[in-house]
Amino acid sequence: MSTGAAPADAAHGAVSRRALLAASAALPLLLTACKGVQALGTPPPPAPDIVALRSAIYAEHTMVARYAAVLVLLRSQPPAGSTPQDLALVTAVSAVQAEHTAHLAQLKSRLVQPAGSAPSPTPAPTVHVTGTVAAQLTVLEQAEQAASDRLIGQLAGLPASLAQLFASIAASEATHVPFLQAAGQGQ
Image (cartoon, rainbow, N blue to C red; front, top):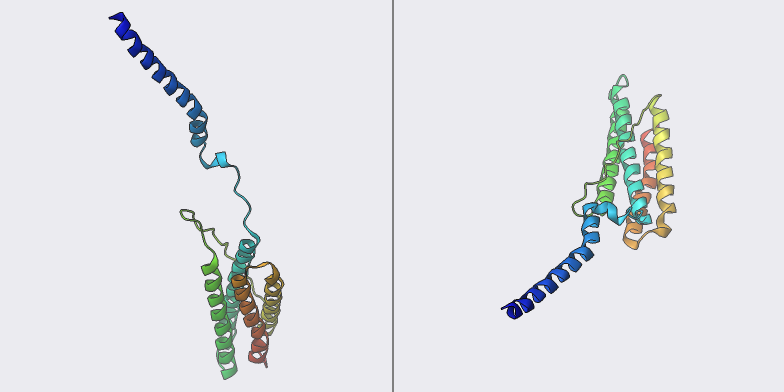
């Protein structure tokens, strides 16, 4: 009987050694898995087009906030809305703000977040307005021109579809300058 038991013990011992070898080979993988995503190292920096897109999104947030602040100023100036020119100016500033809100929506629609990740928060821009309405219109005109120039300057390094969107927004922002100048005549 001992001769019959020896091959079974030998086979059982070989399986145990294999299991032990497999477990010891898997041990570093198991330990690495315990570290989670940190074991992979730091994620790569975002691609240049993503950086440009995030920058454009923040800039549009800022433009929307600027227009909102100027609208508050326009509505608080006595006698607010007392003349047709005041009403026309409020209407013009509101229309341009609505265009910036549409630009922001278009830009945000191009920013794809990886599945399961939280969207990166966009810090709310703080905009303070002081002075006259005429001075604030000049600030808006300068901001529009600077935004248009910045977007045009970024076109060369962007994928075609994003470059087309940036060019379209830049053209729109460039047209806001004479529109605001015409709306602000007499301020």
